[in-house]
Image 1 (cartoon, rainbow, N blue to C red):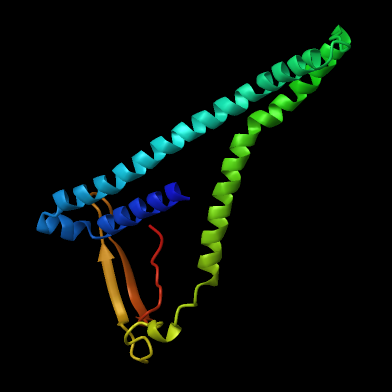
Image 2 (cartoon, rainbow, N blue to C red):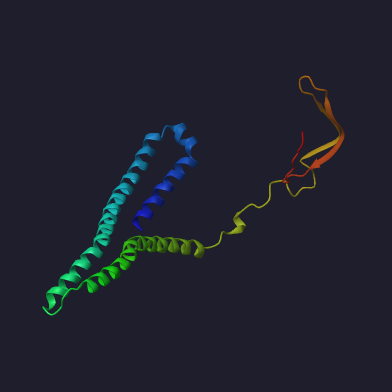
Length: 190
């Protein structure tokens, strides 16, 4: 959880930096922003290092666990009572069962980590989806002048021609069109 919070803080700072890069360059604020980004990154790296140590310990523990369980089981089995004899049939049956349990035991640390990450993500998504809707009365939804009947561009009986080097002139004659403000217009073709 802490690791994801630190990553989010670093990405937010970098996003602000990149969105205002012109101002940062114009006023020479690079050293100040570099210091802020490096400070956040150092805290994040310290947390990642701690997390890596915990992850190594967990993986080592869960890797050694089947062997230690096998050793403890056979030790208790033979030392608990002198009447219990460890025969090959009992030993190989127990080893086969322990071997079956080894794969789920090795996956357990990764499953726990994935569950924690999913829980954090679900909490963040829940907060986002439960947030208030944007107030649409504060948003301008039309372009200025788009509601007027007067066109932004008006061409009546237009004549346009051009030529490339070594080619015959090409032209458009008696062209009439009007472009409304706020509309999308495309001219396609050669």
